Length: 288
Image 1: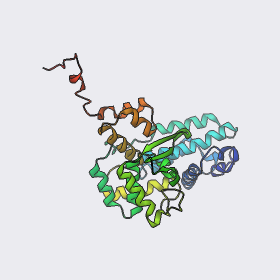
Image 2: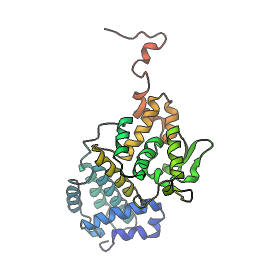
Image 3: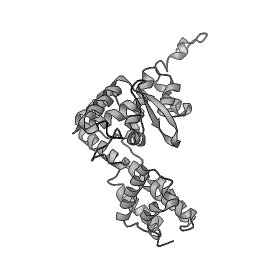
Image 4: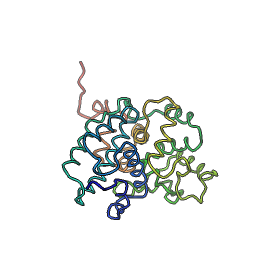
């Protein structure tokens, strides 16, 4: 049990085949950070030691990043538990530490305004950075879906994107006028030529979520905005759709959500949501 190097687990066939190439890169980065903090072997994973590392990193690292790194560690440990190389009771104690990671306090907005998106674009130092922001906003794709988006998935005639999302499920996302112009510009530019496989590529982006988030954080800091991540940009796209009067069923389909989740998040943004009862036949709204 004690001699297992956590980073080496990623190269074991039974574990490696469960993960995509992008996920492996993300896991490697997370395990390197755990190793730098002194947690290299399975025997190093003690509740007190992990708690110490989380406490130290919480002073300088966003809670979302800390939770993701802890989830990576628990994923590797779960595999070791299944193979009899780590005690399940110890894994349970480490998992409970997730409850003590502080939640982000800066996050108040559920979506950005067009003016805030414009501020992010103006704060971008390169076309690559502004393209990343606009692509995330106008498509509504998850960060993983942005990384995996290929030029071949774009139907220029039907103006749709073929997206492979969670659970390997496919869906089609409409290409609005703004997104269409952006993709055409990226396709024609020298940095995003037709010979490239992926829509997003470049030395600064790499092929991992961490690299993508690092670029977005650079833009956010220059824009002096307290909190921006890819989930917020995705919520922005969905919120704008609903505010424009797009039915929730369509938004759910385009976002890859269930209708229940979509209604819970966005129903209150529908035009006339607070006044529809007054227009319903046979109903008289109460007035004091």
